[in-house]
Image (cartoon, rainbow, N blue to C red; front, side, top):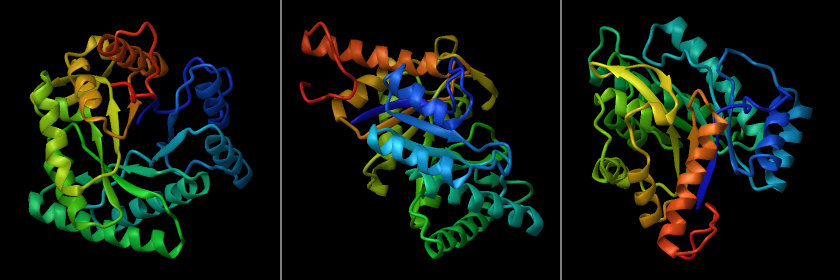
Length: 289
């Protein structure tokens, strides 16, 4: 099944609460996923609001994800790691209350450490967080995001290596970040195939994928741009997803947010109509392919 949604409250939604955004995603956009953004530190959410979000998402079959605060470093000094763990644990509690499937985290920085040393610290600290999740009965998985800058731990191989060692963690495939980090290498179908083939050893039942255009230089992300403004085509990705019928959630992280979420939907439905010869298509229904 393919799910599509924005990373945060849609820009065109007049209400600015997560519940407002969720209702808008269903009633106006007719999409079926949302990644709630807790990216600015310890953002509050009441139990009442969390229950409303959880109930609405379950009743309307909307898959929920949560993004933890951006600045996290699980390979830093002791105080920095402690604060990072606290941020992840707080966001994890929110994710658990709303029934989110994955909590997305940024793993950390290499600093002066080698790749091996950095990975070892991140694995150790993630295992501790997973243990604390279990103690608090938080069912949300930890999602380790691929990152778009060379100084940051988070190449695709980095993330796969961590997820192999930390039970309860899964990769979050940020295609814009991968594209930036490899200096624009995602152009053809086989480039996207290579990503999913590398993930095979993890035996994932579903994939969380971030999609955006990206401006980059020398293997480093500068900032996100609309999908059409970037040089990473999404049609080869869509062909791959339709052929292999992956269970995938495509989250738009474009500056245009819901506009590009709808653009992804449109391109998928066009591809389905081309394959089936029908005049209409629904991105949620791949049974006729």
